[in-house]
Image (tube, rainbow, N blue to C red; front, top):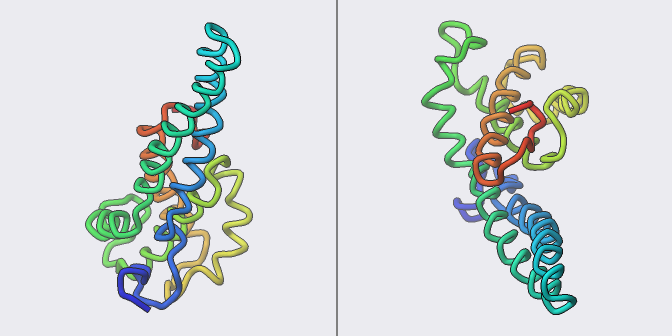
Length: 173
């Protein structure tokens, strides 16, 4: 397998964000929503032709925004950010190694990308039950890992909110 398809942990499993899932989901959702809104606005002025034109414009705009959503969860960018910043987080005990927290950050970012319509709190029971298989070599139990996962979830969702205004992560901001 090519190195560019490896996830940051170095194993041979494909990284879901590396396949453009965010771009596809965001493009489709943005295209539908944008097309409906633009079609309604233009269609109200020019009839059915305006609605078709509005839908086409909305689909293109949605695809562009969707690419921004996919880039918001770039695994290499997230890995570098958390590697540089993990030790300053309040839930990280002194002397802790990034290798324990890295899988939790990846899990949080990947989980948001897979569940952009849910809040972390809504997804947390499922994340908790799946942590055992996602943790890799991390020594953290879920009660400690969840703080890092939540942090990464919110970092990615806040990036999405900068690209697409609204409260996509349902955090009230």
